[in-house]
Picture 1: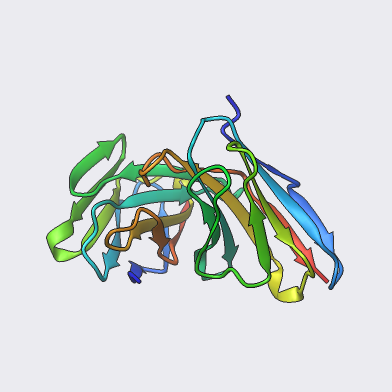
Picture 2: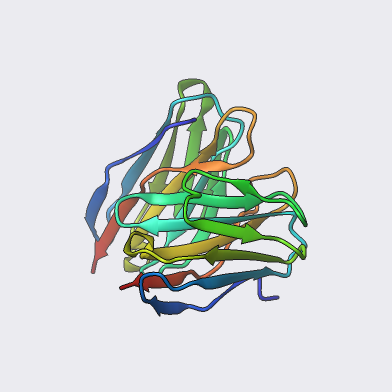
Length: 113
Length: 109
């Protein structure tokens, strides 16, 4: 039982490049989330999804897009990376209608130069 | 939205000491969670505690929802307790939790 798996674990991008972060969960959770973690800022919600085919904006959505074509996968895209998007990105999932049972992935460290 | 504030921001302990971490929230909540992020970055859910007290080994948590705070107690701290502790609570009517900025704990041997 893998839980929540994020790929890649590390990535360096040049300003203006694009990339997609993949989050996959095998717990049949309805809800999935993308957070970014910056020093001293805690975890800030970028986008989230309450089910297959749905997405919604969180606290800091600008510069990111997401898609949830399959229930088990939640993709985070950066269309034109900027140095301000240097961060550690975490994906999480939880059962429907419940914020307990939160399970996090191991994170992706992204550096934009 | 809800404001979640944690104190202290940093805490340094000697192994064996006890500590209390505090989480204040600005609105009424119907649930609250505590998480631990270890030095390698992994986030683990410690407690789901909308009210009352729960214990898990050397850790326990208490939430007083009417007074809008929660406390995390760590007894007989060990070096493996080091890391960052986050609390998270959703705004009223939402299930999406807002995270505090965390308490960074270092336990020295």
